[in-house]
Image 1: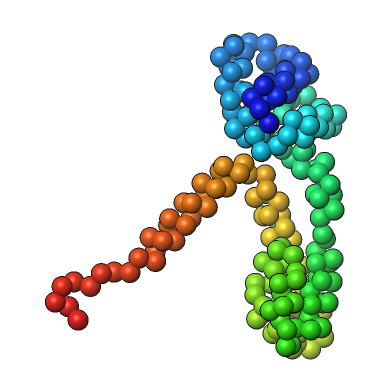
Image 2 (image 1 turned 45 degrees about the vertical axis):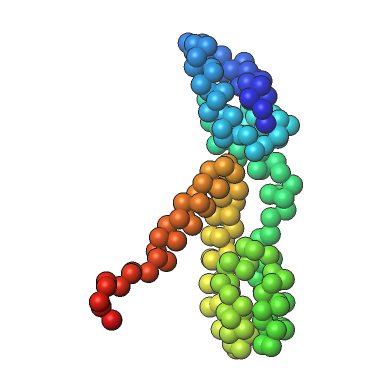
Amino acid sequence: MTRDEVAKMLCVIRSAYPQTYSKCSAQDITNMVFVWHSVLEDYTYSQGSAGVRIYLSTDTKGFPPSPGQVIDCIHKAMPEERQKMSSLEAWALVRKALRNSLYNAAEEFKKLPEAVQRALGSADNLKEMSQLDIGRLETVEQSHFLRQYEGIAQQMGEEQKIPSKVRENMKKITETQSNLLDVQEVPEEGAE
């Protein structure tokens, strides 16, 4: 979304909540456009305006939205968000993968969606689960998986809301920290 499109969206918000913005200076509005653009630049204008319309139609408190609230509304409207797999549907995929995991765990693991893979941990865990008795699998392991999956699915949903530039910077920082930890100590001269 461009800055001009963000300014149009903010104009709609200002029109809906005139009292809140009545004392804003031109510089305040310019600053708002800058901040909102930095957060919403990954979205299209149609997505952003849909998010604002959803917020306006569901707001019962009378306060204007923050950028994060608009992003939440955008994600609620996205088809892939509405079609997100439930934890029981994810467990059904795991159960299907378990049928062939004693000898082909790695292949079965690769077929699973990323959130399911993260909840399982590794192909080795899938192989171990395939060897469990059905009682333990359908009680303890299922319960553990469902909790893991719900947490990971929620985390992945929140990660999607973070602007791409911020995600890239976070990834670079993490890689830099990881590289610093990987640096081995150089032995002192003469020490063996």
